[in-house]
Image (cartoon, rainbow, N blue to C red):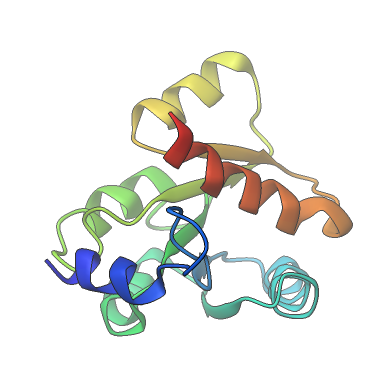
Length: 145
């Protein structure tokens, strides 16, 4: 229910695709998190809430009410797939689209991540100058299927 209310609130007046504004970003490496957060805020003009672990995302994600979750795959403790499974148990985040970011980009690994429900997988290392466009393209593609 909260998901529908948020999407209706974020609805663009000129399009049937909801506006992408709020990103929950989960990354355990501080230097990567800083680069991505800066990129998303300055280039993409997104509102970003960064978390350094899956457990932090589970604790703070519902209050942030993201439009999209950007999730690292390889993290200590709770990895990305395990974090996603836990986030899906929370009513506020159960249907929020997810994009995984990973250095593991074989076709099999990408297929496995998409089978978990990801709308896209972005390869690391990434290009900060194209990251926002990759995210926006994945966001729009999910509504044109």
